[in-house]
Image (cartoon, rainbow, N blue to C red; front, side):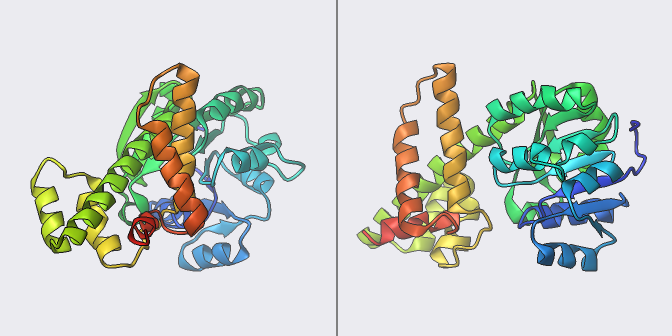
Length: 297
């Protein structure tokens, strides 16, 4: 693999709600795109909409691509794709290729994976994203890139096809740590905003007035601007990010705090709230549906 703007073959594993628009943008930028997913339907859709080529196994992706992007649910699935049997990716990677884990993975597992891929002759960085489906579609995702700066530089044009802000966070695993910490803050902001909305409505204030005040005042956050009216007051609850994935990221953040010996006054309370919501509403529910837990009490 060389540096610069050359359009080398790219593999994309995980064609889900986020993976589909991200992979589509890569194809639109002229990169020869090879895709894999356990869902044949997902592969059929992206291949019908782009020039992507569907592969039968992760191993086939490795044999054909100089950069491979993983967009998977968690570290357990990442490890299975990389190391799980004869069809796994790692044993078939091209020498000098780069594997980019854009999943919401556990940073401690990411650090374990790096040396194993290095032994296989490949480089590894973590580059999770923030912004949701809407920003995946328009290519304005925030990307948190952890790992060797020279490796990140080699794939920065590729990352730029998907994201507007590419922030190098430091050592391998730091991108995944920051993704979890960002979602920890986001989850706290959403829950607080939902509680304020519920209390205000119960007091007799119109929802649009509550949200207008929050957004004109110091209570403004991403949820008050982009979630309350759009997904909660509207009762759509379809932002595209699941409650289970949010709970997972909060879990990673609180585990990270324990590992580093950091004190978090809010952490365990926040984690319990999201665990309760997941138990009541189901992991597949949209994360904005946490308001329904408050609204039913």
